[in-house]
Length: 132
Image (cartoon, rainbow, N blue to C red; front, side, top):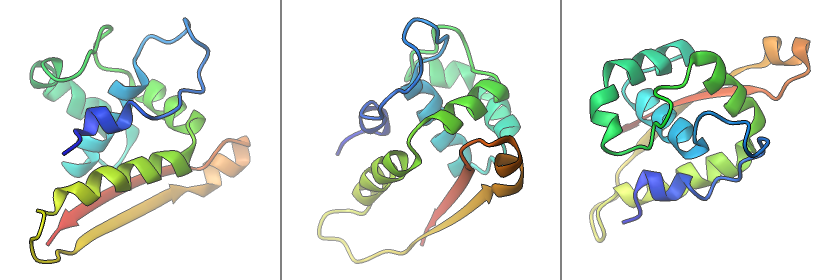
């Protein structure tokens, strides 16, 4: 099984090299973990990161600590949302045991269209999943 970290390392980083304080992989993995645990905004992703910083440091690089909610927001505006969705689906499909009975994974998604359209940004997406 490929880890979430290894899967998200495949995500293409559109940011300017050398001007980034946080690893794209760290931001993506932190966000996925936070949303799975109930985070519903970039603020709550940051709060999750700060609350579990010690546990995350053993698994993520976090060279400059937990990214701010503004940084997380900017990263998700910049990345290719289709590639992120494909990588997330690739990772999530491995959660079902090999040869095990089919399970339902309910995925709930939200998009912040109004703010994004007014500002001319990419549309923000939040997601959560529940395995039944």
